Amino acid sequence: MQKLEELYSGKAKSIFKTDDADLFVMEFRDDTSAFDGVKKAKLSRKGEVNNKFNAFIMSKLAEAGVPVHFVRLLSERESLVKRLQMIPVECVVRNVAAGSLCRRLGIREGMELTPPTYELFLKNDELHDPMINEHHARAFGWATDEQLEEMKAQTFKVNEILKSLFDAAGMTLVDYKLEFGLVDGKVTLGDEFSPDGCRIWDKATGEKMDKDRFRQDLGDVIEYYEEVGRRLGVQF
Image 1 (spheres, rainbow, N blue to C red):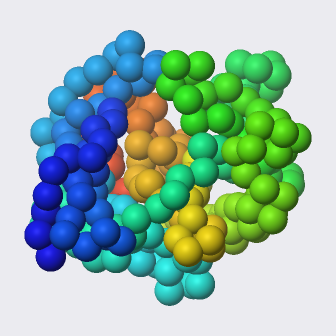
Image 2: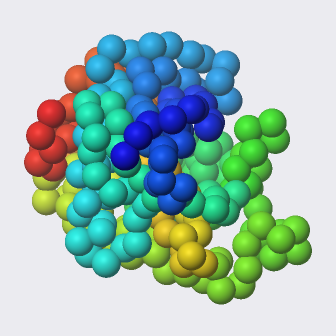
């Protein structure tokens, strides 16, 4: 397998073609950003940490029967992934109130949500990823009824798996976002799962262990990412 030219460069990852049309190389960089790119920085080791963290989580999900695009680790910062036809809809599950939910609805941070909430957002940086509903997705052709149902089912299956995993490691999985695409018409989990795209709190102290440490200038961002990984069993 040969890595070819860069196909796409996002905020923290780059995608490269390979000599196999069905496989891409996903490279994790040290770049990080918040507030739609207004706040930016390079954090040493971030690419390596998130690559290994993502590989661990994706492997756990695959073992539990969730279809994922992750194939295998290639290097410290690179993973081999399946080519996806991406669905431009982000799926968000919230187990505990935090972030934009609190701002939008005046909800107290830390309120346990029973049952967990499920929200959809259009993946569009220029529009700041606006919140949408299933009717929007169908009307504008972003996803079919069947795809939306499968994405919802898989998102809650991920919640069932990961809530238990984090809880056993002394952490609360507060919320997270997932992105999906199609492989031969089958809805498949894409992008990444790392502390960049979820909120994680220490179960005993409530200390924040995710990207909010960067957003809120709490410091030691990568050190906390590594601590989350070590508790789960990631080998860095």
